[in-house]
Amino acid sequence: MKIVVAITGSSGSIYAKALLDTLTSLSAQTETVGVVLSDNARINWELELGEPDFSPYPFQFYEKNDFFAPFASGSARYDAMIVCPCSMGVLARIATGISNDLITRAADVMLKERRKLILVTRDTPLNLIHINNMKTVTEAGGIICPASPSFYSKPVDITAVVRTVTDRVLDLAGLRPDTYRWGESPTP
Image (tube, rainbow, N blue to C red; front, side):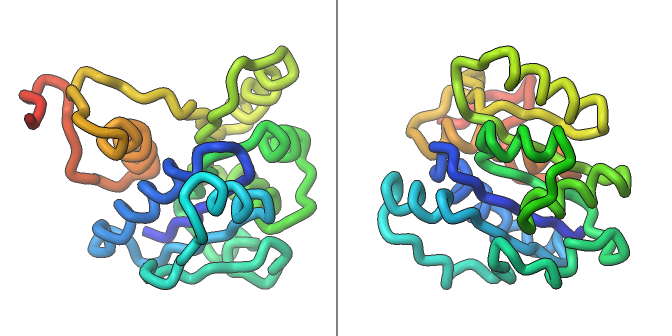
């Protein structure tokens, strides 16, 4: 499976990190993982998690304006795109078809090619513009998956709470992370 991960400037870098960490462990299920970060994503990563060090990740990282990245074209046949976290500004640009950087161009490609586009929104509360943009993206074929953790697995720390979101996102993308499934006994 070929996946693109976009990280935007919404608070929630911990979700992006957990997603990349889990994707690293799922290398047998992925052929290619491309990653692109907005400028504000880098700022928030440093603010929330410390100085970003992406060297441990075995993925190809692309600059936000690299329109020669393979996933900027439908002919590259990427299977899924995950925007995590997805800011309301990026959501708005995707909903209105404004492809002014690699993130929004790749999202546009996913929608036009009828491939999976998963937006992990984190902002709250929502105004009517946000809700209408979510509706537009959903009607165009995208999936809105808010960063709303679940607790029935009885997560024991913040990483486990975060993974209730990111594992769900990976499921939606078509991957199979080793995660709690409904009906199982929670791991102590």
